[in-house]
Image 1 (cartoon, rainbow, N blue to C red):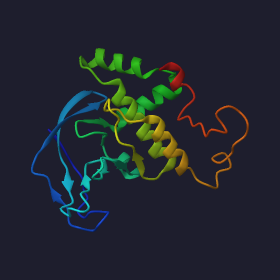
Image 2 (cartoon, rainbow, N blue to C red):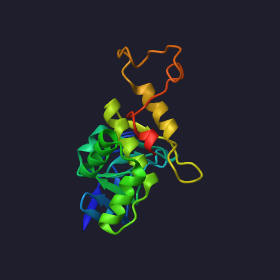
Image 3 (cartoon, one colour):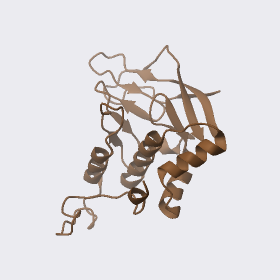
Image 4 (spheres, rainbow, N blue to C red):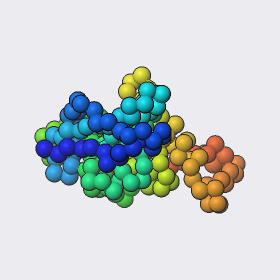
Length: 197
């Protein structure tokens, strides 16, 4: 069984030595060859005023805000929650399929479900895609807003935060003409995905 643990030893916020949580978490990893059962141990900062938690692919503060770093995409697996992760190759293939073949998330999930006799959650795959693309676009730590009442990531807020991280020297990043969408700071991760959803 795959066991995912962060390599961090010291809290990046307060410098305190991290402790490994006693409780093991079970999760599902979606890979190109089908789902795999895995386990995860997070580490936590024992400093009560800090309270940071460190997972395989992200950190989480006391308010539940996650931060994913560019290095998290170099791992074999990419965890988006404590219960779900993805093979990074599967995420790359998903992105290529969406961006070049104009296939929707729903169709990708239906194909995966049929091929592997399982049920992959479209909403979670969509979140993983946008988090991955955000990291690749900015090449900087990506802050993921708290989940809403339906336990979903607010993707619009995520895209707004990514827009703020775009390089200031990029002439297209700060361009704002009168074209609809431009002056509002509209951002697309790709040109076809929204149309096909």
